[in-house]
Image (cartoon, rainbow, N blue to C red; front, side, top):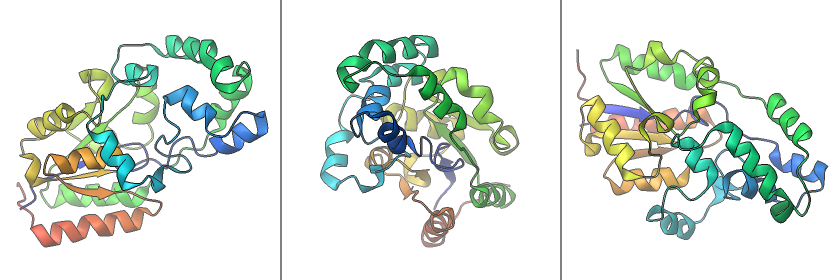
Length: 239
């Protein structure tokens, strides 16, 4: 039976992050995918065009790979500050973009980037709590953005367990962060469901025996997938 549900934040509770960055690249005359590579070390970063179409081979190859390979990852595990990350972007830009990055234009893009909330997911999380099903939040995130993302929906109201990569010094898809989350919420991986929009993170969770929901464009479809798992496996509620 399922004893807990573990949710990602970005692209699950929030709308997909960094949407529109492809248009930003085009408008600025940067090579396609180059800004993603510069920022994240990965042209297929979550929440942007193309990642949802990663092949099975791409995902399989990534699961066993090192989870910290870029400054973005170092920032997510609290080893690098946001200021240092921005400095690194500017230093690497000529090599990656073929020209210096226009930081004013990039910061404007970031400020105007729409971030909404998937309220059907929030409502489903509340229903799980009401039904006695523990839920946890497992997010790769950045220390300096903590107040902002926590203000987008009622994090403290919903979750007793929040595992933030920048606070625990490890990030998905490192198996240790999934095991830590399961330990904190008091379940075995095999008795949990993990919901995330990143195929690499989903594959890592499956490797640990967790049931998974790969969140796509439609929050209602993701909630239906979650409900189907709960119906198939049954729920061991705590009251």
